[in-house]
Image (cartoon, rainbow over all chains, first blue to last red; front, side, top):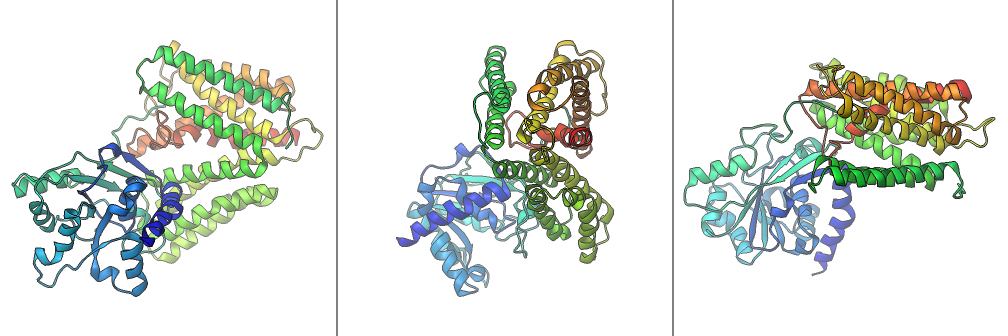
Length: 217
Length: 308
């Protein structure tokens, strides 16, 4: 339980001030986010910061119950990173690839949801190019089929891939946007569900977040 | 800084707060919808006036930190809006670091460095950093747009802060924060006055291609209002003669108008309406500091040339 205090301190003293000052995230429709688990938060993925932003969007009291699903291969790459990822952030390690079945790979995620946790999940599977939604992988379908009544909260993130892109370690300040969509539910139709999810995550629209043209003032 | 209630700075700040209360009362009558743009604007004004009052009265360091933060937010908003190259990430990082440096020169009153650091050294050095990345595609646009942003959001705005440390010379009764307040109040009220006169009497569009809401009537009304206000405030906050006060008012009114127009042209070029959503009702921070990027350096040099 000592690690929960560490996580609180990390978010309160480092993540929140950093996101407020160095980044500046404009959040829209934050009130749509869940107040309790179990729930699945899904987002487009361009940056390591995505996970921190999504965790910081939720109230601090929920922090112990928030679990981001993240690549075991990457985060267990060295001991320090593994300690930080599992203890401070509280990731659910997901070991994708190698011909493993969905049940093998995503089993721990299903268990976390069954235990009432709020799980953060990136359906693209990996960080892609900034502001381009990659192909949604089939893992999300398997996951929502396991819990048909689970609310799925899509969050569209914009700009974080510019602040800290894949393969770089130096964050450069830019304003970012996070938009929380209406919760989705599994409806049995795979194509329709994926299309609705992709639309909520900004697929196909590119820079869809900024407003229209007509300068004034 | 020791202050009393009869300190001119405190008196004028009191006037600003009184005006804000009055404006709030009027707007709450005019715009009954709780989330109307006008009401959001007034709410943001409360925040702006509170922060500026604190910065100007607390200490010089607090004021420099506050104005440095404004430069940072403005530059960040600018760099978020314009297209940037991913290869320039490190260069942009250095550009941000110029902000603490520029405000440090002000803190130590090193005028020579303050006035050439960005226009000369950064103008030459940041493109060198870009060249060293080896990417020539879009080089001129990247170097040009970055320098435009630094000149407007850091160099120009920092002139407001340099007013705080102008050596007092033969005017011991004039304080730096007072001069900064004079510039801030006139610049912002000029914006408001041009808007109000335009709404009341506006007929003839002054620059329809850039900003369709600007009218000749709004502009003239704004200039007259600002010149009048300058004449009223100058004896409290500045060493200006009556004529110079009128000139300073006209300078701020005209410069503010063009600063506003310049940012409108930039937004039109980029195809966006509001620059951001940091201040509800105001668009972003750029929409609030656009006029200042023109008024601050021009007013500063007017004051410094004739008086300090």
